[in-house]
Image (cartoon, rainbow, N blue to C red; front, top):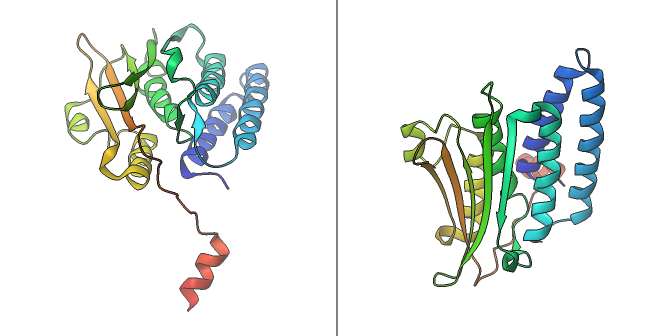
Length: 211
């Protein structure tokens, strides 16, 4: 069963493809092929934590899909500490951060934006830090105060997931980047396993409500 975060991403991607079916059929076909590859990779991973390397590969597939749509307007830099590639994290943690930057920095401007994805290990705090910085228009100050609530559904969903998995031991922050742009950062504890999350099947939920 797909998580809400994965379904949100799938819906957004299909909507983007639909917009090009008639006006740019060649691009729509290219995006459908990239999406099929991305869905296949997502389903093959199953549930539970994934390696940073696996999550990074998924993000690169997603960026390839968006580059087909945005072209030179989307520029990316990967700055990942090789020592973090074997660390396990919840699935679909990086992708909402990247998607937020694509939507609110690159796609909304004629000249696009540069996105920088960085992954670091904080030895002193035993934390994994995942950051996506962009040089776009910048997040409004009210959104900074709420950590992204109301700005992008993916970030709000991610914050709830992290709270359910780690309680107060994980944190999602949204910051204004010095010089312009936005930084979205997630800090994950590496010393404790996340809690298990269970999804109640719809049939079981309906039966429970009838009791």
